[in-house]
Image (cartoon, rainbow, N blue to C red; front, top):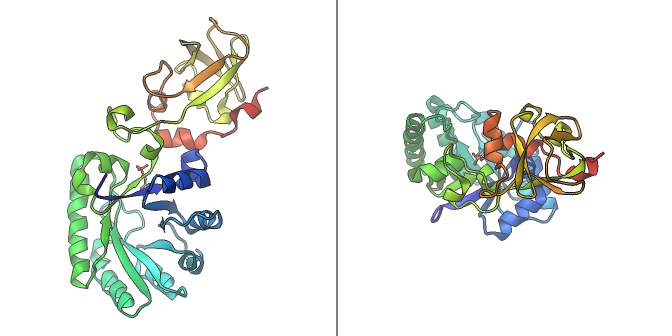
Length: 314
Ligand SMILES: *Cc1c(COP(=O)(O)O)cnc(C)c1O
């Protein structure tokens, strides 16, 4: 993504991988920012001693803006009322102004943008806040919509510049960051693809050089029975569709129960390792291919998994 900076998004417990460990790993890998979704998550990282710049964008009027400013967490503002609440927090909040470029998800609508940015830059001059960025989110539903959103974004940035905005810009999450180089601007926000899954349908993670994806294993616990079920987050509608790998062979999963599932008979014994999904290039399915079978995205699989699978084996 260079020369753009990278924000590693660690929402939803870092997509089920463990917030603090993943935030630390991202910081050690020189990610410039951590995307934390809400202030509470940002404060958890600060309390764990992680000092990497962090950005929170989902607030309620009751959010702890004062805590965020005190602990150095950058804040999104998407409306005048949110901006005023943030500016009232003691200290100098670092604010990213959000323009709605079509997604209609907590950003400032274009017709209100001028008054909003004028006020934000006035608050900056008064020393209440720093306006560090203008940002938005792309829907990724189609190339046309994304390029229209990028045009709207540029108009919004130009308007803010007329009031003295000198900060940076960010709009791309994983799909755009990989597919649309003009969308990278000064920073990209990388979520699920930081965990090794391709954000682009039809393009394998290895083709994007995405590192090591999550690998989930279980165990053979009786003849034809493996130690993973839907309570662990293995989707029950994968029944009759998914395969698992044991000793270099694939086996169809016939029935998915709460704590265990049954598979076709074959060449394995109790105690053998079952690869539920894993690294590309192996026989086992990838997270993407499993999700494709049931029409969902890897975010849902990852965030639904319980980390300590084996402790449930019966
Ligand atoms: C979740 C999220 C991201 C990361 O999205 P991916 O497509 O997983 O990279 C980036 N920005 C915002 C605002 C998000 O909510």
